[in-house]
Each structure stands twice: as C-alpha cells, then as structure tokens.
Image (cartoon, rainbow, N blue to C red; front, side, top):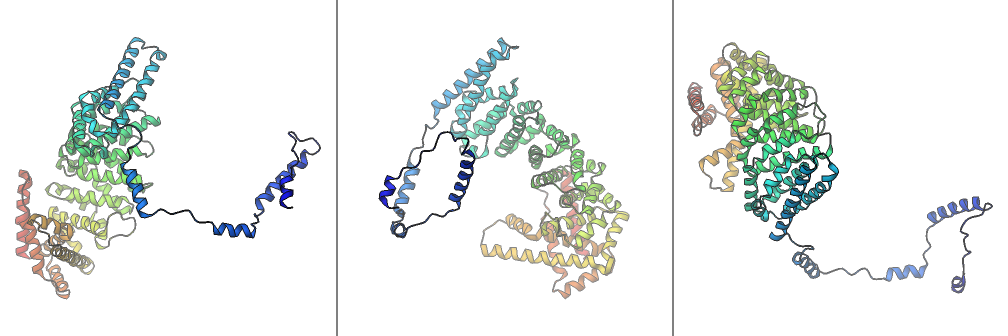
Length: 561
C-alpha cells in the first residue's frame, strides 16, 4: 500500500451496538487482535532507524549553568509568606476567640452537643493552624507573652479528648528538640513557661483518661512521653520534678499492664531510664514505689524467652539499665536482695538467652561497694560461682550483646567485688575456685592481665602521638577507658588470691609471669597507682570512709605481695 492509498483509506465504521449474529465473533476477534498487538514487534524501516541515530541528544548543562541554577534556588524567596510577629498574633487571637466561643457554647448548652459542635470543630482547626508557629521558634517568646501556652495547657482538661489530644500533638511539635536548638532564647522561654505552669502534672492528668485502644489517644500517649523527653533533654534538672509530679508512678503502672508489646511501652522504658540516670532522688523514689519488684517482674519474662524484635530488645535493655541505675541507691540493694533479684539474675546467666548480657551488668552493680556485702555472700550461697566462673573462663559468642571487653569487665568486676566483700565460708569457697583444674583460673587471670596491659600501652602510645596537652585527671580517665580499669580489677584479684590463698597460687603466678616476660613489679605499680587515685572528692561521709579503708587495704596487699 503506497502513500496515496494510505491517505485515501477510510476504516469501516463500527456500529454502536453489535448485532446478535456477530456479537460472539466480535468478542473473540477483539481479544485475539489485542493479544496479537501485544505480541507483535513494531517493524522499523531502515531510513527511520538511520534518522533516529542521527538525531542529537538532549543538551547537557555546563558546570557554570548548574551553579547559577543552584544559586537561584538558594536565593529565591520561598513561596508563601514567612510567619512574622503579626502573623503569630493573628493566629493566637483567632485561637483565643475560638476557645472562648467553644467555652461559652458548652456552658450555655451543656446537654446539647449539636449546639456546640460547630464551635468545637472551629477550635480544632484553630489548633491545627497554630502548628505553623513550630516552624518559627524565634517567635516563641511572643507566644509565651500572649499567654498562649497557658491557654493550651488549660485545654488539656477539655471534655472532648479530640481537643486535648490535638493540644498534646501541638505541644510535641513546639517542643521538638531539633526546633528548640534553632533558637536558644525561644526554647528557654517555652521551657520556662511549661515548667512554671507544671505542664508534666497537667499532661499526666490527661494521660489518666486516655484509652490506648483508640488510635488517636494511643498517639497522644506517645506524644506526651515525647514532650517529657524533649523537656528533659533540653533541661535535665527537670527530671526530679517530673518524677515527683507522678510520672514515675504512671510509668511503673504502664509497665505492669498486660497487653501485647507496643511502641508506647518501649517509650515508657526510655523515659524511666532518663529519669533515673542522673537523679539520685528519683532512684530512691523508685524503691519507695516498689519499682525494683516491678522491674524484676517485667524482666523475669526474658529469663526463658528472647525479645521478639529489635524494639522489644531495646525495651529489655532499657529496663536492665534502669535497674542498674536504681541499684546505685544503697536502700535499693536490700530491696533487690529481698525481691530475689540475685536468683533471677543467676537463672538468666544459666539459661543463655539475650537477657544474660543485662544480668551481668546488674550483678556488677548489685555486688560492688560496701552496700553489696550481703548480696555477695548470698550470691555464693545460691551457687552463683558455678555460673560466673564458666563465663570468666570463656566469653560466649552466641547471643552476646556486649563486646568482649565489656563482658570481661563485668565478670572480673563481679569476682573482684566478691573477694572484697565475702567473709567466712563464702570467701573460702571463692578462693578454692582458683586452685581447681590445675590452676586454670589463675592462668586465665594472667592471660587477661597481659591482654589489658597491651591495651593500656597502645592507649599511652596513641596519646603521645596525638600530642594532646591534657591535664593529669584527663590523661588518667583516658587510660581508664583504654583498658586500665579492667587491668586494675584483674590485678586486684591477683593480689587477693596470692595473699589470701595457698602459696601454690603465687608460685603459679610467678612461673607464668617469668615465661611471658612479665614481673610482679608491674602488678604492684598498677595497684599503687589505683590506690593513689582513690580520692574522696564529692563523696559522702560513709563513702569517704570506705574509700580510705579500701586504699589502706590495697596498699597492705601490695606490701604482702
């Protein structure tokens, strides 16, 4: 068919409605034709192929043109108006009018929702509009000056939880840490306003009426915890007030609720860890609220079960960390002992689940210091030596969340604390462990001694090469983190077992040291440095006395060694 025929060709017009005779045929024919069109490859004429290859490619821009475009984008004003002081005032005024209108309608028609519902919708929209202020933290002082923060906090007690949840969402946006760091003045004003109005207490009161089975209210719980985290991160001193106003009690209650694990439980464990991390008063309050028992009950599930997913694992680790923080309070050591925390931690070590990592950390905190004496003796009584020493001899590879160095640090810390605190038969049972199986545990001690001696040497060389002009305390701290802390624990154990154990232990130590080029002088030097740095600055009366006794005890061991 030539070009003339193509131009004169007219297709046969298709009838609007097929007839009964040809309807079946047309259906089959159309389906076959469509299939044939999909399968058939288009035929390209030779001259068309040559033409396509001869067409030039799209022009590429030069580097200079690209820089001009980028400069234009950066300097070009953004679409829409930037929210200025007048804009903020308009939004706040509109919000106040809507809030007042809704209050009046609710008072006038308390039993007729249809009368005040429209004003409630308007108030909800006004709250939505106010979220624009979160993009300009420089205007926060104006927001505070106009008493808008107080008005928002008043709405937390609104009868309609849709309004209160919207307020919570807005406060979470305003207090976002990333936004607060954009304007220090604005952040300071906002946090001051929230603290002065006792925002945590009002937020807690709102939490009590939220039902987490409702998605919006479940999100409001999450946003409430986010507000507390934002406030605590920007001003850590607020943690004590937050706990006193009831949040610590609410978190413990939330942890005890028997519901499937969710994001809010994870967030609750994070806030608990934050509240306990730096505030001794909160640790004491946790013990008074039976928080030690609550944490032990929650962690007991992981004795024979691993967490189901990364988030639940994080929640488990947060609870272990919270328990470690709580055990820094002396009164909580006794609660931990009476709550059979030692038995639970010992079982976790035996079960070889992920919880073994956290239980090692908890035991390290529970046994250390003079307040750990009763726990040390009890741990020996419940056959804890059978559990700890296999971990001392060999660091596990499976389900280990801690690094090898962290694992070894916690284990030698536990053994060192028991050697310091155990008395009578418990101490004799502990010392006897080092003579078993041809002194294998003494050999392991010296293996760790040489390992961490090398780490300290490398750290010192790195400090010399860096040429940093650090103060003596800073240098000592850097060496501690570079392996010296664990080396001191190991050498402390060597001193204890050599002076209190049978003479054969010291003979074994001397033999291994001579074979590997070590000496007793190095161990003495490490322990003298340790004793010299046992300062009592900032310590209480009891702690200062303990440090003095510890210093004398170590120096006596060095003299006997």
